[in-house]
Length: 146
Image 1 (cartoon, rainbow, N blue to C red):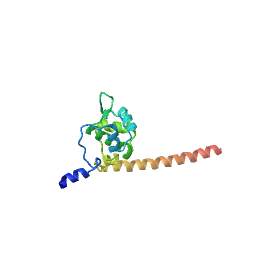
Image 2 (image 1 turned 180 degrees about the vertical axis):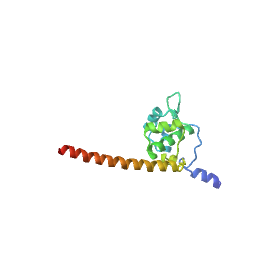
Image 3 (image 1 turned 180 degrees about the horizontal axis):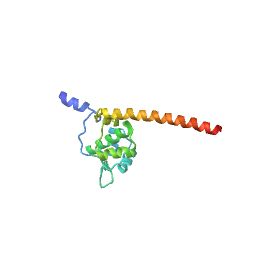
Image 4 (image 1 turned 60 degrees about the horizontal axis):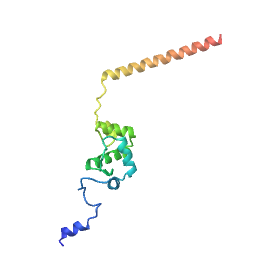
């Protein structure tokens, strides 16, 4: 037996790359760390996850289905999306590493000087309104004492 043949024999099934066309629900469960009953539930909740069924009714997952399961698992367990949120992200076709990463990718423009001037004017107006309120409260107190 040559060295390459001995290495091939020494490989366990878990060490071997995905080479099959179809996988059973048990195999997918072991590969993804998701229980079979959860996979069946996800089939109902997520339209992109739709494994074909044999004539006996046994589910057969393809590589694209496994990728979808891994994406759903990441959205639900790591990114902490709700089922509805994960469903929406799958429909959009966007699966950023996290919602924060998506926000960080958007470059916000610097505030314009006009906006800063408007904020300062708003603060002046607010201070004026506070003074008027204080004077009205004082006047109200005087009228109560009459």
